[in-house]
Image (cartoon, rainbow, N blue to C red; front, top):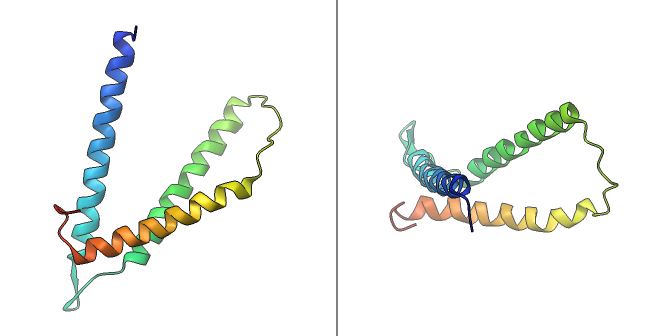
Length: 109
């Protein structure tokens, strides 16, 4: 049986994911609709770069938290290069998504 507090947590988690995903799509489309010097600003690769910079900033929070908590963890046995494959695929997918947003309406996306 799932407790009431965990159900509330799950509902807030789902709502947060829905709102952040929706706002991400709308803000990306608004950025693609911006007119600069008489031309549309459609730079999906730059948008992808800024998105990944934001994701890497999460590492700062992670390492600060790890330093403050100072938990003794067992030795890492995972090769960090295994994360390069999904990271590269995420980079490709994000670039394609932002390119697609320059070509279609956000409601169709």
